[in-house]
Amino acid sequence: MTRSPARRRASIADVAQHAGVSVGTVSNVLNRPGIVAAATQERVQAAIAALSFVPNGSARQLRSGSVTTVGAIVLDLTNPFFTDVARGLEDRLAQDDWTLMVASSEGRRDRESRFLRLFEEHGVRGVAVVPSADDAAPLVALHERGVGVVVLDRRSPVPGLSSVAVDDVAGATLATRHLLAHGHERIAFINGPHTIRQCADRYDGVVAAITAAGLDPAQVLVEITTRLDAAGGEQAVHTALAAQPRPTAVFCVNDLVALGALRTLRTEGLAVPEQVAVVGYDDVSFASELFTPLTSVRQPTHDLGSTAADMLITGGAPRQVVFQPELVVRASSGGEA
Image (cartoon, rainbow, N blue to C red; front, side, top):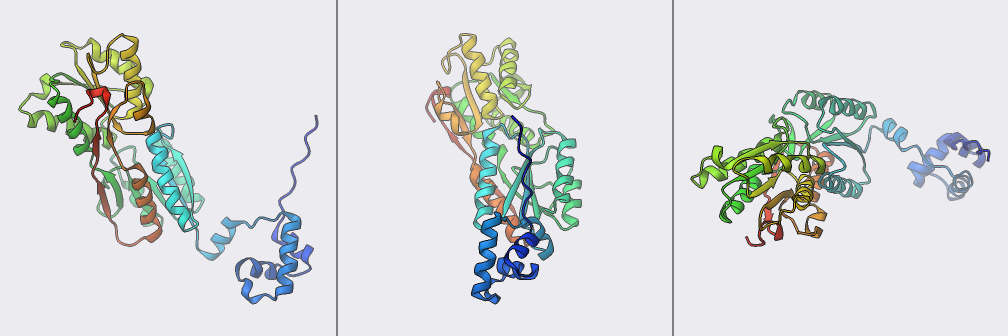
């Protein structure tokens, strides 16, 4: 079967010719209809309908200096946490008819730099970025070139940039304190690389809770660094189970890692939470729907995104917003607060 050639997109000049008016008149109908006679408006609108004309919003924004597109770079779009954050961004932007472009850095500086460059080349009004490392120099440089910047899901490493974050030290402290209160004195913490600030902060929260309980982190804690996905959690649990003495609880840096951990524990025939308790982080949508519902540290994902979007829309002096997490206790850790 032969495919038909793609139909050329109608231009504003095509509409003008079809309606028998000037390009300027069509532009006025689109942007300032109040100055165009009613009969002329009807002819132009009829031409627009006949040609299925769609205005080039990007070109119009560039001409008027009123670009309303925002870019967002997150660590991993396969993680429901980041898709929920992106939805918060999108919902707030939509209130002002702004649009969103989203990319995933996969925690790699080269990908992050590439998307920052591409977004700037596309003329975005601002960017919300979950940084893959502590170096804020590229974001500061972008801000100095007139692009709005909000550091997302972590505190800004420099005072000149706005940020929206959750207190990850506090969140990890809540989770670890919960496990200690249930008698677990050998805890595996399945974490990501400390170059990612959220991972470093959550480690600090684990250590703080153990220390506050009068215990020695060197005796209680087994930290295992892995990929921030379910496969990483599966692999890391095998390492945890081989540790001596074997941990009786597993705290995971995010819920995807916890999902993998639960899979491996079930494969190994270990009962959750009777033999090994499991706690995740983020409280994504599937956490409460698992075969053994997952205890998790809840973050206000939608609020993170919507607040970042609001900062980019309203501008103004740099602001730092920090939300507080909460622990949602379910069956995977014993089902009691």
